[in-house]
Length: 272
Image 1 (cartoon, rainbow, N blue to C red):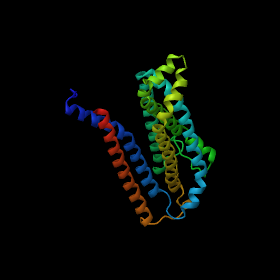
Image 2 (tube, rainbow, N blue to C red):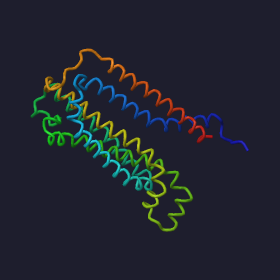
Image 3 (cartoon, rainbow, N blue to C red):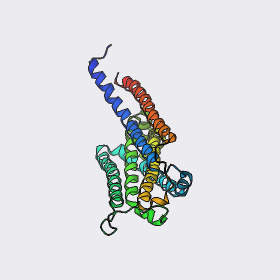
């Protein structure tokens, strides 16, 4: 028996599902490309090895610690988001937006304070370079990093809840729940392990994005405050810089093309 659904409706459904499947990877690639190109232009191109090695331990430590906190919070809230539906999803959506807006505003104010030479008493937002004071550096980053961590945790919880929505209605999960097993245990045991791959990419994006962003911000602020403290930069773009930008752009295009192709095939199968 043929389906009564018009072909145009199936096609519209195919592209709607495709858009949902490709939207998050596309956003991730866009962020990675922007951060990568910015880092290649802003970080010192001369004796950069020593410059990076001085800052990598603390920067990577903060990025790793916030990634762990993001994973713990996201995994803890995901079962609640899966069972409480739209109400909690709206709250998490607001937290995600806050995690995007607050760091962006903070970085804008911090850079304007440095670039416009605003007196310290006028602006309360100030970035302290990591090599100037490690404690002051951590304190200055507390607000944007906390907001970004909470936003990433909320995004992780939403993604895991949405990925596991179908699994929650499976016969195995319903049978386990009917036997009186705790919903949180069933979710972690039979649902979470199948939904974790979707969250792993978000955690990787959080770690790399925060790591590169802090390094780029530190390079800009240090250069404006004390240009002599940075290694000498090449006056013209080097071959390594051009090659690096080219690799990032080509890799991004190839990755998006592969994701779009796979997403189209899966979406077509779902819609049909």
